Length: 193
Image (cartoon, rainbow, N blue to C red):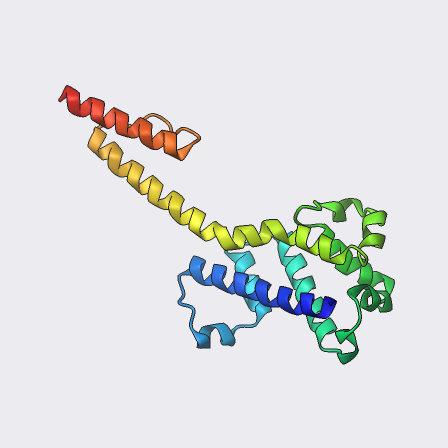
């Protein structure tokens, strides 16, 4: 059912955004902190600190609004999102469609205002939403860890450069081969000394 899908989607989005904001800002995830901010406030914070861009912000706010409007109507327990969207005026339908079609895998389709994608949006709702959200959720879920790993690597490389006593060659594209290259340089220097 679409009702279950939207409820679960909303919970996943809120959890990913809250976790990413807390990790990035360094604020501990406390019950008081989480319940003290609205999802919209967390989305704004995520945008301000660069976790999501303006297009993603618009998409996530639109999905949050759609979720709230859809799940708080009892008759929607057994209805599809397509039925719900059909009740909205055409402008609101387009706003929702464009906010989601402008993000993620569907691309920046909102700029071209692709009428077939907009008209097919209600029927393709789940597929389109998941495709639009995938890159954002991946970044929110993995971005912090990737940044921390990169930070640790930069620190490690700086430490190795001090041991080497002169600037290291530029980094190679692959961190593994770069690490091997640095270690080989240090071994060679050690043998020369």
